[in-house]
Image 1: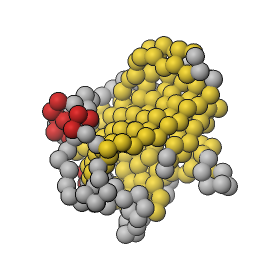
Image 2: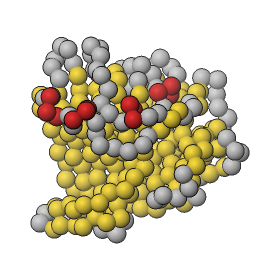
Image 3: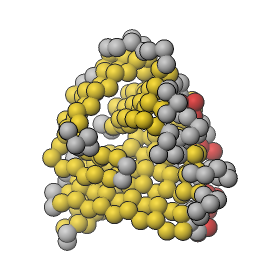
Image 4: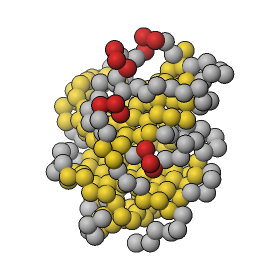
Length: 257
């Protein structure tokens, strides 16, 4: 594993209460946003999705609610991106998103990308209908994030990686890295085993990307925890995949440790 370089920050993790679970008070800054992303996969039905609800506050061009809907199923994929003017009715009473507990990583991001960010593993249940076929989701697994603050995709980042996953209550991972426009190379992460959170001491990420610079064929990751334990949560691409706005999303069929 490569050592941390001088311009690399391994960010700490801080616990946060209920105030980190609700929509935050926006500022007058251009490109301010408050959003929630849900990534999920049902291994029994081989279906999953990537969804984003973003409240994008702008004094100059007007505020909007942006919704990304991306699903993959055995019968095909579906993608739709919508944006409408933001209304007061778009938020729940009290400003909440109806979510659970999170881990707060405010110190790990630049002010031009997101002042606050939380990630939490969870489960998904319900139904999904595509091309006339309805799937009953009983054992879906998910990662749900909440990010707020200024997010300038055009100039804040040169590159980034966001690696999250869960195998259920016994094991979950969150790993992130990015090279910012002000030449900071930042990476952080943690493992959750049996409700015990262990932070990463060093992280090495290699992604396999096709020559069109978009499609992801897989990834190799090496993580050294603060306990000294070495882990290699390597993922293989499953057959189904879909592209989403500003990201390439792929669902992992298997994880090896």
